[in-house]
Amino acid sequence: MPKRLIVSDVSKSFTMHLRGGVVLPVIGRADFSLESGKCFVLGGPSGAGKSSILKMLYGNYACNSGQILVVTDNGMIDLVTAKPREILRIRKETIGYVSQFLSVVPRVSTMDIVSEPLIERGYFRDDAHARASALLEHLNLPRYLWDLPPATFSGGEQQRVNIARGFITDHPILLLDEPTASLDAANREVVISLIEQKKRSGVALLGIFHDEEVRSRVADQIIDVSAFAPQATVA
Amino acid sequence: MNANPSLNGAHPYNDPGSDEPLLQVRSLSKLYGSRIGCTNVEFDLWPGEVLAIVGESGSGKTTLLNCISTRLVPTAGGVRYRMRDGRMRELFGLEEAERRFLMRTDWGFVHQNPADGLRMSVSAGANVGERLMAVGERNYGQIRKTAGDWLSRVEIEMDRIDDQPRAFSGGMRQRLQIARNLVTSPRLVFMDEPTGGLDVSVQARLLDLLRGLVTDLGLAAIIVTHDLAVARLLSHRMIVMKDGKVIETGLTDRVLDDPQAPYTQLLVSSILQV
Image 1 (cartoon, each protein chain N blue to C red):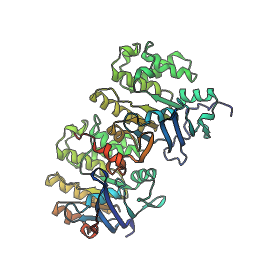
Image 2 (tube, helix red, strand yellow):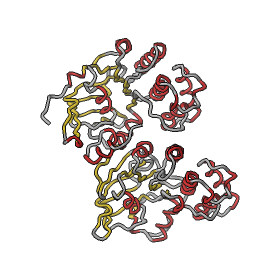
Image 3 (cartoon, each protein chain N blue to C red):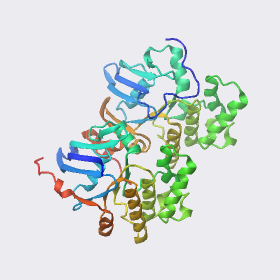
Image 4 (cartoon, chains in turn purple, yellow):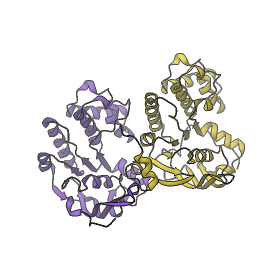
């Protein structure tokens, strides 16, 4: 299977300038790659840096060293050194991200939140809404909620809005940060089937799943993040 | 050197995928006597991109905005802008008439205080229509119709079209100012604390409106704000300023979630979490 993304010798630490410049190493020498049609899962105890890795792959966190090579339509791009404009383009065209929490924008309806990624990519509003409706239906979100902003929804309902928004696009790489965290069993099944669909259409996935059952069903390979534990350094 | 930039409605250089910057700021400094307004600022802005300039009061962000928009003459450095004909021009080398034409048509400027950007004693419709007349529109019926369309786009009821903005609330005035600025289809909009001085709920409505308009119209914008939440919601990239200097720049969410400079870390950690 072709590699879509290659992480090579990546390390990350936080320098806390407000705490006298204490250096907090998070990741040391991470090495792995993602393949088309496969779901890789980040494993390891909490605090091992799983979320930090996802955030580095999305360009949300800076890396201290190493390379994150992404295969794009414009050739191979290194996310570690990419300019903000290149990262924005990669997020639009290549790498999607489903976060754990929905960042709610005041006054924007569920339907618009879910269809927005497609509209940004030039879809007609009607087509985008049709695709959003199908996903929301599939995720069992009651129809009367579709026109409301999700600010007042329950945790599980917000999570499903977020999943619909994250899965609606055709990004060839998809990052998943605990997409099943606050879902009931039925909706967990739906998310598992969505992940399987993505795999069949050749998407390279990388996820964090604390739910043992979900993990074992979707994972093609577990990447043990504790192997990337940084060497203890003197601050 | 001659000929005003043509106004043909189409925006050949408004393509967000364009590889040519819309605006280039180079070594820009403004001194007030020996006091620094802003110093040695450099950045590029691309079509469709929203840039936030953040910092505390006195950090030089408004001075910078005023220099870029030619409202102030910088002490050193320059600003180049891609005109509608595709040519890159040095803004401070333009004829006065060319510069005024830019400000009236291709640019918008949204002031923190709507009274600075509106004519308070003429009607809402005329405030919007005036900018259209400045670009040569003469048909009264057409002007009124376009003005009405824009009022509804910024959620002002049509029955208020003949009212003066002094009869409007703060939030409505700000929305009217935005309509007045956007009616000529500018390619670049400058905003100075556009939500400052408004109630939180009014701010939310305005932000949502701005966010929609910027995306729909593919506008490039430079927004000065001290409010990091406004920057996160509206901007793609961010410049952090302190004492007239650029402290940190980058992707908005990266600067906010993984700030590198000590000052940015202080700024980010000072936000109240709700």
